[in-house]
Image (tube, rainbow, N blue to C red):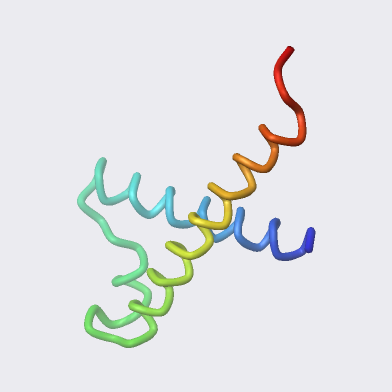
Length: 69
């Protein structure tokens, strides 16, 4: 399970860097590496979104495992 968590974290970081590039420089790395209308671009965005949801679940699991006293 730890491999899944680390993989999701890597995808989320890549997605965050891509959003930073879009925001600061109006440059989309994913569509630059792959054709804009490519199915690969959609798959990458879908994976980043799914990994973000998994990371949200991990965040809340962490809080339930270690309650603040």
